Image 1 (cartoon, rainbow, N blue to C red):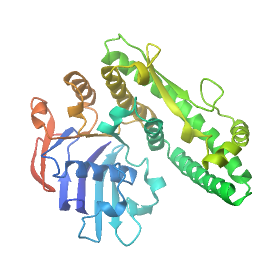
Image 2: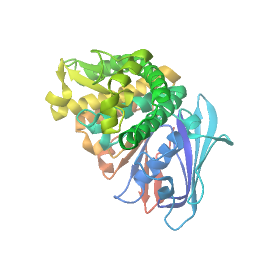
Image 3: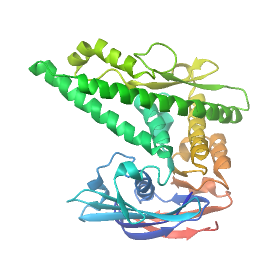
Length: 369
């Protein structure tokens, strides 16, 4: 899988730009604030349908313009395809795949991408939401049905939370319909997560052993703070029963305390919790192993590697981890790297260097496939 070109029209600080890409490693370099990350954001927008920085769609359009667009031409399984994103300040965003208009839930999985940003370096010691997002994005891209299931589950939880607030301040309301839906969705989500986790854990363990010279063993466990012990609950009736048991507490807090939106991943090396006891070096090695396992997992599920987007993360890794990442992707994964330090890649062969300044491509070299 590889992106052949992107056409940007009034997107962030790009007025009108068309950029072609080889299959190799693409280095996007320039000073801060010139548009490197904006370009990466456009590539991510094409694959996922939204900004990875949490920007509103209208904020992706040039400030003095009413509309903008991103068009990606890419190859998947040897077939040329196209994704078009049309943005407007007065109407809803439009997503098109091969000239067919689609909702976002059908776009996800069309062009598979893995993003690695400085925020991901907090995967180990950051909040559980980061680890849930890591897992959900990975599964969603290889299993679009899982993404649709997540959307249904999140809507049901939101509706239940509204009723909980109503019950606290206005009196009785029926939660039965939402409890049944949430229980069913929760069991299905956790079954899929556990299945993916078994594969990811194996792949991450193998990669981690390579990164540490076989001196450390990385393990991953699924954690439910309300659960019955090791592993995850996969029985809908058990979720329903737990929702009933926690109903009064949920009314008091006006939020749903049971379900996969509360779950977490626990990572350990040699049996020691990385979040509590791991050094910064151990945590970063584990994060790198997780991101590389994400690439391998997607290949095992779809038959080809996704596109890798590295947003200013190389400067956050030491020379050894940086080299390990480059060795892993070279020659097999199309990789986009943003950096303000191109000299650290000076000796890297087979790399396309693209200089960005003020929303324009200043130079474009090394375009061999």
